[in-house]
Image (cartoon, rainbow, N blue to C red; front, top):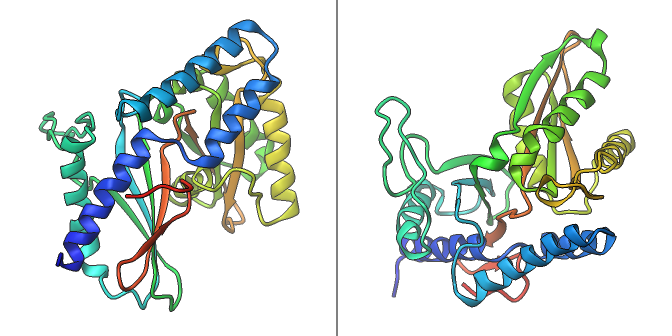
Length: 297
């Protein structure tokens, strides 16, 4: 019988494989919805190519994008989960194995040696972020693979309160209307509102990992999400950055309190190949996958 760490490693290796070859259900459904809203033959043709690519990725057991990105893991750990100590090295080993078995394109480069590690691991890679979620005995792992195109539009800035929230909106529109074209629209936009660069950037990442269709908890935040979504989709940008009706699939905002003298904002973009998966492990190492109905790993 496999020990707990080996079971975790093997399961996460398979989750990585799933994430890189099959889109989460909510994203796949949203792409179909946006295709129906396009009225130009060119846009419909691009969406047809998207879906053909996604179908072939599953049929031929290949990643749905050649840039398999770098691995990010966002953990919600209950204080009662008994195996927290094995998680970092388990995730690293799962990435190392998945680089060969999926396969993943080796993308991790050491900044100062300028050497590709060859297995997508390295200094602080995979990237692991922890949250403690009370006295639960479960561990929820959100996996995300961030490619270069969707990282390029990322921005963060601290504004004076006198500049107002309009400055945040301008920053978001600048990110989508220019470098956002590199990220293969339609995009998912994550906006973080905080008091410094650090927490705004992290919140923006967590924002675009939310399930599509969810809203900010405050009515004004939800309204801002809806207004920015409407405005971005009036830019005339469609799939692959060509003329169309839907530049983005969703706009999500996460926020914290801010300092009296700062408005800190960050924006992260996710491309149509939104490789997000969520798996919850129980203390006996049984698990449930929330993002891919019927998936077995």
